[in-house]
Length: 242
Image (cartoon, rainbow, N blue to C red; front, side, top):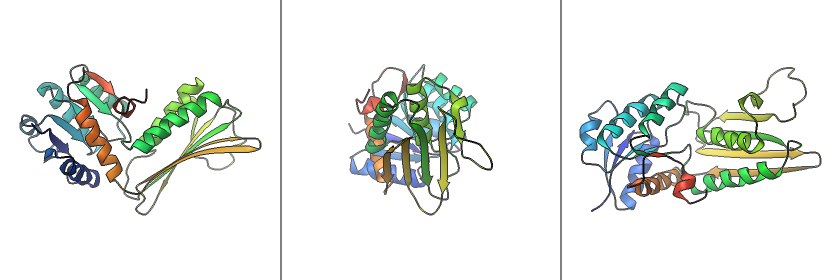
């Protein structure tokens, strides 16, 4: 029996791309928005996939928890309260939650983790991301993930993060992690992580040219999560990168 997906946000750019990827993979799907009768639609689906907007994710997660349906989340920009609500649902169902579903980006995460563990704070860490002019949240979910990887690897906290710079900010502090967002045009998603020291600089770069790479990853995650124990998973679990 073919896996059937509920795609929340199916009319958006990513929703349409996921529908095409599901078709290519031989899966059936139903398009839905949280304003529709998602609870009824879930009855005939095996997995829900959410690429909508941040206010819709938690209500959908609660419906999935009530229905016992796994969930794949690609929406970003959730508040702390919304994240807590979603995390509570993971006690009942398996949830794959990632800021980016491309294979290349998840390999970038792995490489950044390795670099941050090897290179000490004499290598200044900076993250620069660029997306299309219509993206509403900043930094991107991928940039947030990269930031978290560096902070964890170096044993430092959010107080070490600098989001952009303006004016007479003084010299760069040792251990600071810079995060910068650029918006314009139709850029699907570019991410650069820089480790800069005296005399040398390491740059790890990923550039996405087609949303299909994210859609294929999301469909792969939807297939993988079926039958998994309740909890929150990342693409590193889906791709066995842990």
